[in-house]
Length: 321
Image (tube, rainbow, N blue to C red):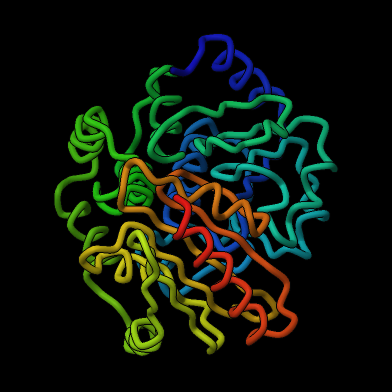
């Protein structure tokens, strides 16, 4: 539950700021993009001067689903020149998850940390970190406490955040109150927008992504207790949703997908069993996230050896959970 004092502090820091910078984690997913765009809509309604910046952003996917005014988007190299006096970080459990943007956190006297991850390390001066299905849900509840009414564009972004982080209500973080929240959001933006988001996130894929999925499926290996492990050796930047196809395999409780992304190795973890948390497994690789969905990033050294080591750790995990 959002506390009254948190709302008072939030309103105060925003009111006293002239320029506001919005950031989120590296390789932003639907919750990160949606909640950031949503909060930017709130700032816009206040007439605030704000900008946002992404690191390793999936232009093809998000520019089609959630087009925004490009004048508010900064390149990484232009952040300093903008000269913000308030930093708001959404959907990020710790600065290390921000990749090349993590150094920004230490530059600001006031940082607002809005998140829902259980492993958040409360790095902000103001931490609005709540147990919720998505940061989009936390943002929605902030608006509720503020008494602020979303417009259709902001509602669509908020809905996208919730649908993305619950796998359209398939993941174990889904709870009954969420359906009522989305129903209220749909009242604002309409069912047509709901269907567009569901279709864009889950029912339309590019040929290149299907080809990557084919390689991931071809490499699937099953371990004891319902663990599926796979990898992609190609440079795979556009992989949003691929692990869900592995998770969907009958009998799979936990899915793990490792792939190369430029000079990194990204690992995604998903659980289909409410009694099994993948956060601990992600932690073995320096990552984190939710019990049902987590991630980790490693610097690329020798991909073949790294995949073998990841496989070994996942196999050992499968024998003990």
